[in-house]
View 1 (cartoon, rainbow, N blue to C red):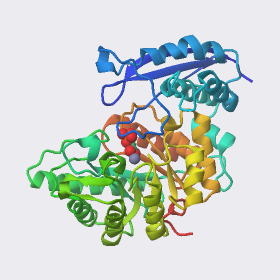
View 2: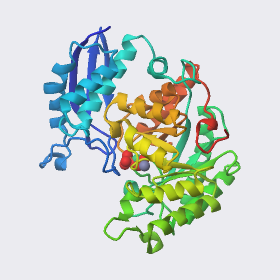
View 3: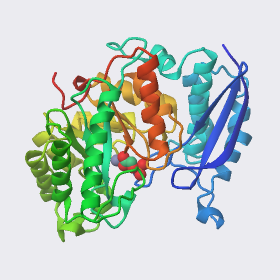
Length: 433
Ligand code: PGA
Ligand code: ZN
């Protein structure tokens, strides 16, 4: 038992320069700090972050969320046991009174929940990943957890790049290596090959919100071809040492009035069925092993159809569909709509909810992929979360921008100084049994 002595919150700026909530929790002479990330392509069913509105920061300020921490949550949790994460999170949820945590603000709630977790690990005298592995680890991983296979953004589009192609991320999965160090070397080679191509073509190598390049491209196929060429140029075998993944983020070009997917870069719109056919074609034409949000967040029929067609060897990965929510995950498994789930703590709203989604996923043979948001800080908690829970995979963004590298560097630190199991594709839906 270690009582929480103090909870403080304040407003800081994230990687897009937008305000976000930072919280410090003190207990037993230890102080844990957590900073809440923010999405741009958020799902309708996510926990709801609280923004001030008004003129300041064009309405994006978080002073109300900060006040919710200091005025309402702090008096509730001060004096409670910092090790009782589940009890703490449940009490804050009850105080909020809404499922979406919109009253206090999910950013206020997660700020406290995450900072309490960090303080608890400090009070236990454990690095965070080991504390998580000990408290919440699953069978099959030891008390040092397991390093995740990273999926690494190389080309960005959609709402993260604006003006490019509609697909939000084209990523590589360097699954032929059994260390974070090796995975990063492969992804770095591929990223540099893309950068060389950009410079040869006379494009500027500017990066989008998650550090991916956003060159002018003729269309979606050109992005896939560019990446396959880059893997080969880098001296790796596409599909063997390094495969491709996409985050289609399809909700954002789905028009619910017409029930069509609008792809301007192809100059046409698609019915849900035809768009599913297009995704299937990509998996046949390219070494594509993971498709995230290939269909809109409530197109359950389309998801089920697609999962039935490609779901044996390809990850059908739910982000906006599942929003790190146990009930939606259960629904998707029952319906056969997805075989992998993105895990974003701020979609869930508490550490407990995020941990429960990872556990439920592993119980139901769904591959969890711990994920950053497009708006991040150098807070690296999710690196420890992925290792400690033995989630198997992680998605952080590209090998650029310090808010991304903070997490990769944390994985390298854990690999260097800890003793977790190595990254393994058997933990992924596309890997061998
Ligand atoms: P977001 O994007 O953080 O802007 O939601 C990340 C994702 O869609 O995976
Ligand atoms: Zn996504």
